[in-house]
Length: 205
Ligand code: DGP
Image 1 (cartoon, rainbow, N blue to C red):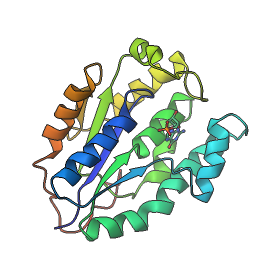
Image 2: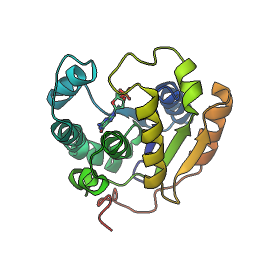
Image 3: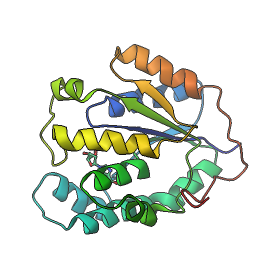
């Protein structure tokens, strides 16, 4: 059986990265072959440019950086498909939904933003960690990087809600770490892939 492709999305400081690590561990504890993937991947070439941009050391046109974020995902697609086919379950920290949400929040046209990511692999499940902006601000580190302002994060959340599909699971991230993790785990623990091959064609249907 192929591996599951599980995407975790959410606004900044929603606890995503910690929860991704824990979810990964849950799968491994069950004896499942599982790996964590993170977007943007700051280690590959397009990711280094993105890192400089996010740390505000580099200026780029909004459209240019959008395309770099998308390229960063495309760069990883073949490896992701191969891992899924080999039976590895992937816990993916952010994906194209972040791509569109952040760029559209800056004022770019939503459909224009979706275009470069059209055709990417389709996740088996998207878990969205939802945290009120006031709570996110109270959590450590908010404000260090480019997108961490209240106004932008509020818009980002609105756009995530526009992108939401029926298959998404919205999780209240304003609970204890354990409670959030339990909800995440309960959503995916029985999940089975509904196709033999990884599904391609995001936003193309
Ligand atoms: P993270 O490493 O998960 O903290 O993400 C870094 C920041 O980049 C965060 O503010 C969200 C933003 N971001 C993530 N993916 C994308 C993307 O594809 N496009 C844009 N414009 N921003 C993104």
